Structure formats: structure tokens, C-alpha cells
Length: 111
Image: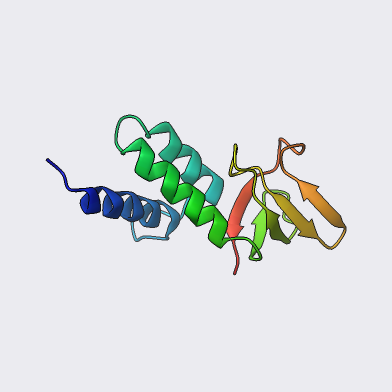
């Protein structure tokens, strides 16, 4: 049986591997990492741990700068608890609601 702590570490390790540049592959866009991990939720990961990981990860990003796929820089303002990738961003031109802007995703976390 795999310990609870090992399951947590496995999720964090997969996230880090997918979202980091490596000698054998480039980092995946942030939204693709989260989408892929969510697709693997019921096969490779413990669903309860993965949901907690994603929710806590997203909560740490409030106030951080990001680059969406439309190349505008924005700051995380609020996270949608029902769809964590569909956030509100504050940009130089106003508020961008990714729930309404279906074609835009979070490409990179900048800082």
C-alpha cells in the first residue's frame, strides 16, 4: 500500500516535471499541466489529494502575475472554486474573466 505522504509527493513531482524545462522536453503551459493532471485524476492519482493540491496551488497564485495565451500580462484577482483555471485577471485594460473568454488560458505564471 502506498502511504498518504507518498501520494502527495507523487502529485507534486508530476506537476514539477510537467511544468519545468528539462533536457528531454520543454515545460508545458500551466493550463495544460492542470488539465492533464485532472484527466489522470481517477487513474494515476488519488482524486481527493489532487483536488486539494490544485485548489491550494491556485490559492497561492492570487496576486501573482501571469501570461495568458493572448499574451497580455495580468494579475490573478479571484479564482473560480468550481473551475480553478477560469480565473479573474486584472490587466492594464481592465478585468478579464476567463470563464467568458473561452479561447484564453493561463500560459505561464510570471511571479
